[in-house]
Image (tube, rainbow, N blue to C red; front, side, top):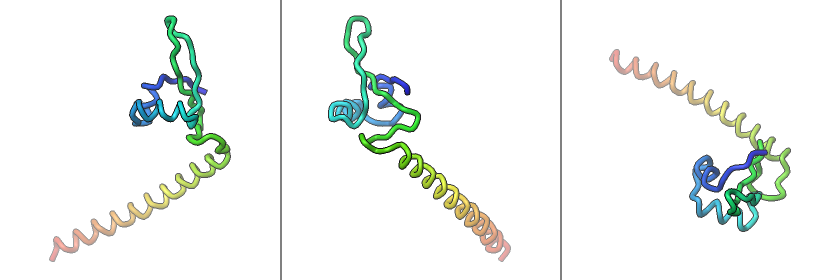
Amino acid sequence: MKLMSIKEYAIVNKLSIYNVVKMVKNGTLQSEIKKVDGKDEVYVIQNEISSIYKGTPDTSEAETIGDYEKAYFELKLKYDQLKIEHEALKKRVETL
């Protein structure tokens, strides 16, 4: 579990600060209020494998991450094969 300021969270996740504040207010992001220099500051709680939506179990998210990794490696394999075929065709065309 890691605490991040709203600005840090927005930068890391490439979101606008406005959208992060909105997500904190409507409860899609877990947050915690701490006093810093006499002021209340809101910090976003980010878990190792954080779920964006409340009530999403971590196991299904872990399975989803595994599915994405599997799909990524399959696509990378196809890409590499097509790249090799492209280079071979390119050499054949150059020799003609």
